[in-house]
Length: 134
Image 1 (spheres, rainbow, N blue to C red):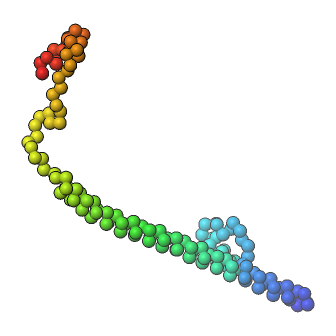
Image 2: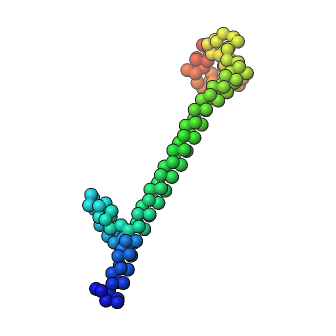
Image 3: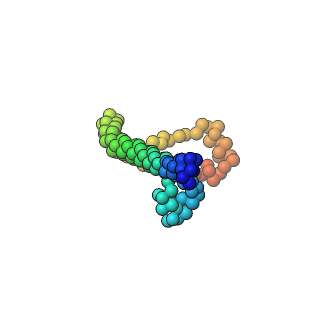
């Protein structure tokens, strides 16, 4: 172990293990024990990678929250504009009726042409009776 080659190899192995960590692979996903194994065996690279992943997640969460706040702000302004538009359009178009509402408003009395009247009388007696009553 203390030979010319043995000691430098041990020192190199300790340095590499401290920097890179021990490769535990899927053992880190074992519930409860995996996180403790990862804490013991992870090296500097794994810690930096985990910190970067957390930073990226936090940044994405902050961007999402900013977007939600912007949408909430836009939606709060929207009812004010809608109310203003409705008020202006009501004032311009006028919302009061000028005449009293009557039954059948919006419809006009139609009188059929003489040829149509004769056809109805000859071919459709029940319909003709209805037309004649009105």
